[in-house]
Length: 119
Image (tube, rainbow, N blue to C red; front, top):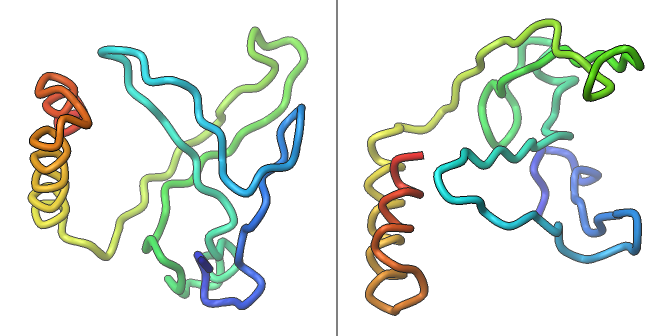
């Protein structure tokens, strides 16, 4: 699916060190640790022009610099909080319904569902 208003915004292949795949491989969840997923290529050029013309609204931005002297090889100089065009309470209710269905279908255990909802 296209994540911007452009016809060129479609991501249909994901490259990793081993292969090119049609889906994005993610690492396993670790209990009681936050899971962060960065979503890039969401119409940033339109955001710079002041036009919130992408799927997510104004996304969070970080200024990341590569630096060999840093422990992880990079540092984050600045973080700018964005906002979405969605109501967080409505999204939470929808997520709870999905988690309840997954728990009833025995796809996830109740403690996992609670953890997901509160993270």
